[in-house]
Length: 136
Picture 1: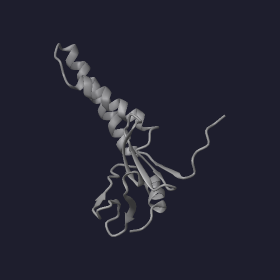
Picture 2: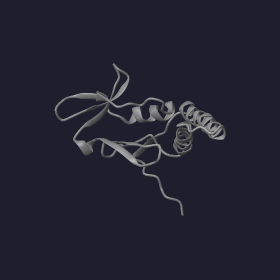
Picture 3: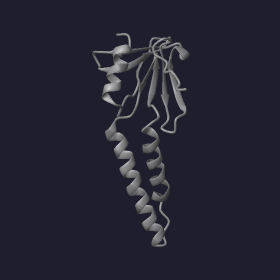
Picture 4: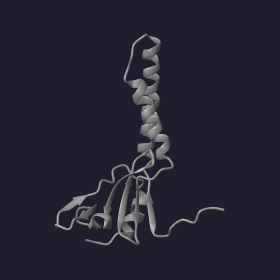
């Protein structure tokens, strides 16, 4: 039995370019780290390589962010899958799209406006998110 998706959740994943960058950089760093070990040296690439590879591979299936249109909450996720931050209604904020700046923004209860980073995300999924957000 498959799980039914919540129609109020809009998922945005990282774009293909950034995923490929993570995976290629991770592979190169891992090879450099193994080469350093073979030559008898210790290199931080032996840790950095698998970390980038893991982030790239896990980001293929894990979301960058999820927007719940029913509650107005925006949840940012780690490439490892766990929730990092929550914006919007859980913090008493309002999430909206500012057309003048072409940015996803959040407005706090005190009136301060801050942008929400959407760097490197899938453009089609970002367009779906922007269509669901209220205007400024």
